[in-house]
Amino acid sequence: MSKLQQEVGILNQGDVLRAWIAESEKALVAIAPENVRALLTHVARAHRLLDELRASGADMRAEEARLQSVEERLIKQAKPIVAAAGGERAFVALRRAIAPDLQAPWWALEEVVAAHRRRRLKQFAAGLAIIAAIGVVGFLLRDVLFPPNPVGDALFAAQAALVEGDVARAFQAIERGLEAAPSNPTLLVWKGALLERQNDPANAAAFESARAILGERDFLIERAQVYLMLGEHDQVIADMTRLIAAEPDAAEAYLTRATAYETVNQLGRAIQDLEAAAEIAQRTGNDTLFATARVRLGVLMQSAGAIAPTATP
Image 1 (spheres, rainbow, N blue to C red):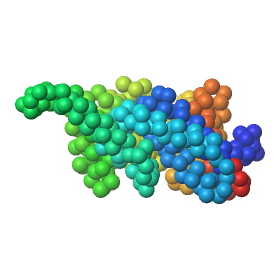
Image 2: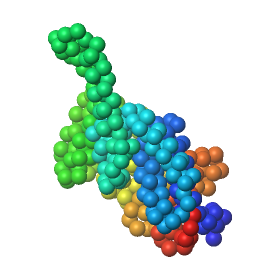
Image 3: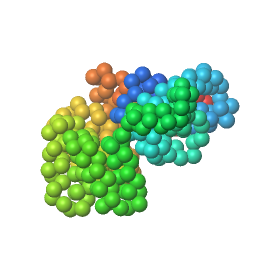
Image 4: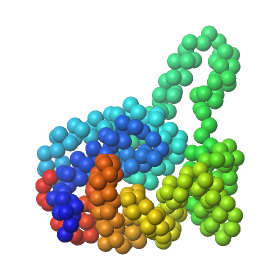
């Protein structure tokens, strides 16, 4: 057993809970589109695990206080979190995908944003003298109060179409997004992947446009994320293997390939990749990625029967 496996072996459920809370706290410091999914995932998992531990009789008062603080910060930062997810509709789809049964004010942040917006509108309306003025000002400020989000709308519509198995409608949604944001690399990657699924050779041009904007490394990782959503796990593994061969210290590639391996139930290979990602992240000083890989590794090894979970945190 390697040194890292020995370290993970001492993880118990209390350690996992504290790690998820710590990851949530870090993500709240700098909310961005690339970390909003991880933020929501960590908070939802921490919430469920805390309930389980309290039900078992464990004393989790310190962890409960930390998680309550995280939940309060989620409500206070609802607007940037929802915006980072791509807008209210995209946020709802994301949180339902992560934890469809979770019901809490700090989880339904789109309702918090809507409530804030309604309150602002009421305050605004109260300051106007006549109804006609309210209508005029509301019309003039419509783009400020409800700014368009063509990229988020396109991604939401495309993913909704794919849930129904309608690839053509998903492609049309991406095309509408590209009309408004023709150089958005995420939309270009989506276009290439959807064209590829339809065996359309034009996919190569879309991929090349995205590659020119992102660079080879970021392009492959971005495309892998899209492939994961499309269920193209073999392609994810192939792309990340190629990236690792070119850049052996690409910790993100190991982490992404581990997700694909885990999805196709190759748990041994997923564990190896998570271990490699954690070792590289620790060596290069990437504390966030190290913590993420280490927690995922501990949970996966428990699921695979590699370690026995402890009775108390």
